[in-house]
Image (cartoon, rainbow, N blue to C red; front, side):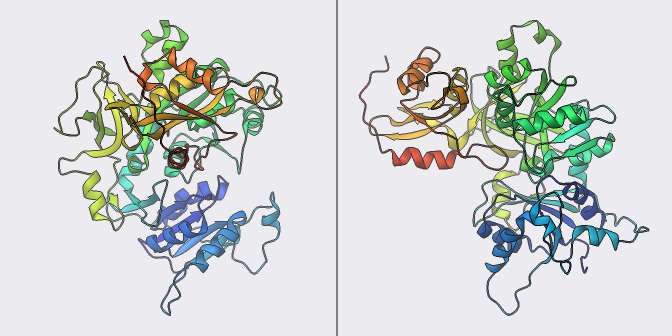
Length: 503
C-alpha cells in the first residue's frame, strides 16, 4: 500500500476489535500509529491529518461522513496529497452494512495479507512508535511522540503496578484513542487477557457486559465511576466477583470512590498524561489504611500517589525557586516527572517541547499539587483552573469534592466567575441525580441549599458564590468535564459585586 518505515497511519474508530489489532499491526510494519478522537469535529480532524502528514487512515464506518468532510477542508493545491482511506466495516451497525463492495475495507485488507510477513523491527528502541494529540486540540495541535522504548516501559510498568493476573477479562470502556487506552492494549496482550470491546456504552451496557463475560478488570475516568454508582436499580446486575477498576484522567472525588466501592468494585487510582503514555503515579495502598473508616479510606485513595516502576522521579516544585516544596500536604507547587515513558517531544514544535521538558530533565505537567509527608502526591488543580479570589488561591478540585458529598449532586465542576470586588469567585456548575430532577421522586435542592452545604464544610472564602444547575455538564469523549466551556458560561454571567467581610 506504499506505506514505508516511519510513515504515520491514523485510525478514526471507537473501541472495536480492529482498533485493538492496529495497536500491534501498525508498529509491526514499521509505521507510526496515530489514533484520533472520533468526537472531534471535521475541521480539527483535518488539521490533525495535515499536521501528522498521515499516509493512510483507517476509518470506522460510522465516521465516514466525518472523514469525508475533513478531507474536503484540505487546502486546494495542485500538489496536495490526500491519505489513502480504508474503512472498518461492521455488520452490527447500519452504516457497516451499506459500504459499497468497491471500497477497500479493513477485513478485505487482512485477507490479502502475507501470513509469512516478518515484523519490521525498529532500528533503535528510541524510534518513534506512537503519535497522540493532546485533548482540547485546536488549530495549533500538540502532537505527542512516543518511542518503542517508552511504550514498552509504561505497558510493563502498568501491568506490574495493577498486579494484573494471567488471563484477565478486560472491558473496554476507556477509549483506545485516549492515550492508547493508557497503554493497556499492550499490557493486556502481555498477560493473555480477553478484551471485551464496546462500540458505545451506558451504565446498563456495562453491567450487562460484566455479568455476561464475567469481567474482572476495566479502566475509566471518574465519570464512569459516577455512572456506575448512580445507575438505576433496573440497570444494575449482580457482579460475578470483585471487579477491579483503574481510574485516572481527573482527580476522583472521595464521595464517588466510596459509593463505587460500596457496590463491590475495587478501585485503584493512578495519574498520568498523554505525555507519559499512561499511568506514571499510583496511589499504592497501605494495609494499615484498611483499619480506617470508609470515608477516610476514600479520601486517601483520592491521592495520586507515588511513582510507578517505570518512572525515575516524581516531585512537586516551587514554580519560582524550582526547589522541592515542603512535604507537609499543604505547600503547593507544580508536579514534575522524570522517567522512561516521558514523551520524546511535541511533533514539529520545539518551542513547546523546550517549555515542558526543561534542561534539568524534568517534565513540567502543569498540574498544581502538594507532597504529603509519606511521599504521596496529591493534585490540587490544573494551574489554569486555580481560582484567585481576593488574593487567596482556591483549588477547584477541593470545592468539587465537597459538592459531591451532597446527596442530590450527580456531577460538579467549579470555575472562576469574574467579580468586581474579589476579582474572581467560585462558580459551581451542578447536575442532579435522576431522582432529584424535574418529575423525580425527591425535591431538588435550591442554590441556597447547595451553598449552605458547602459553608458548613469549608472556609467561607472557598464557598461557591454562584450555583448553576445543568441537565448535563459538557464533557470530552474521554469523560473529562470541559471547564473551558464552563468558564465561558461563567464569564457570560457578568461580574458580581459583593462587599462581604471574610472575617
